Image 1: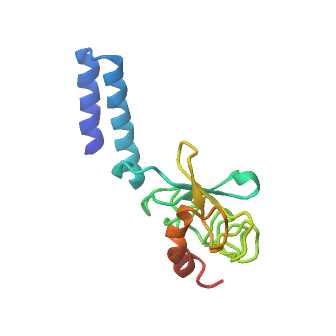
Image 2: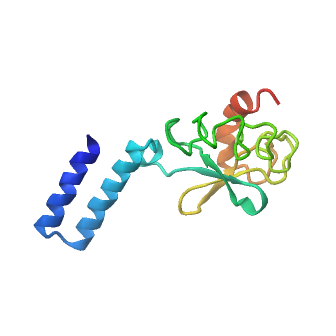
Length: 156
């Protein structure tokens, strides 16, 4: 229903001859509505989408940390690639290098030297997702420590 309203709004703006800047703003709102309909709760609330990347040079996308469980890339979507306990690109898989208690890239490793990074869409760095509370770059990762320990890493 939201998408239909925004599509009508976009059509009205385009037909009424608004400035290019006004059209871009409407397009941004419409895009945000479409993403929200797809389950991207971070964009719905206006909060930056926090993503985690791991592995060598942090090239492997491990999912969205603050998206709805219905978002396809959410770490909370147990049926998605990043929320599955069986996916090789999931912190939930204790046998993968990203969820392992023994891998230097593992979020569940108490001594991880290069655990996953937390960044937003602009590349702004927020910290590391890790149980290693002594990591120099823990930053906002400290906010996720209890969840990581009790929910993600509990059986490690």
